[in-house]
Image (cartoon, rainbow, N blue to C red):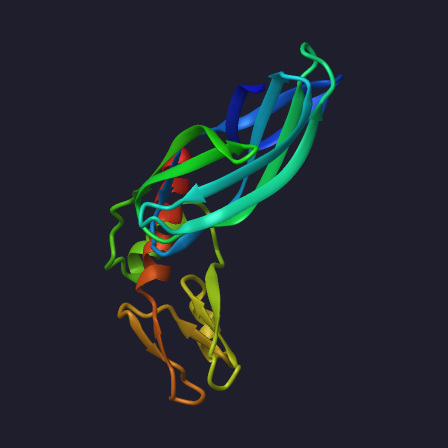
Amino acid sequence: MAVLRYFIMCDSISEVGGKLSFHGVFDMINAVNFPGNHEKCTIVMSWIDGIGKYKLDMEVIASNNDVIFNNNLEFDLNSQTQGANIIIQLEGLPLPTPGIYWIIIKLNGAEVSRYPLTVNQLEVKSDATRMEMKSILREQGVKDFGIEIKCPSCNINSQLFVMDDVKTNKPNFYPFPDVNDFICPHCKEFTFNLLPIRKQLWYNLKNTNEKT
């Protein structure tokens, strides 16, 4: 039977001269909003020993017991000393809730290993005002910053800007409000909840500011 030599979860990998390099190895994800997703990561497994053909199953179980990812593939081992590297790309991995997630590895239908993935919810200021955001952006030398939202009722985009007050006189441009309910100014039929956006913006701004 094949033996799992190593299991690595990382942001990305590269290969130079037949050698793999792992970038951003992690076993924990921090997120601001739930449900959410992890944009992109890579899982690498190396198998050795038992010569033969194998069926590999990998699934990710969320803390609420939902199966949020599964992958099935086959690989061959033709030598006891020369291993087989399996590389799996995960894009947009769903994160329904914070907690302990499990990555379960099965070989020919039998579980051979499982790895925990801790998903934390970050405590982020939820009432950050536009002036507070502007203050941080000024420190960073940013002169123009905002987001675009699209109304599902009328399909018209609105630009909510944090910097550059001149844009007030431009069509479809509005100051980022200090309240979390933003009613579509075009059709008046849909209300956006800006709380998740506000929390993510504040986290991104503070995180960037602390690194500079």
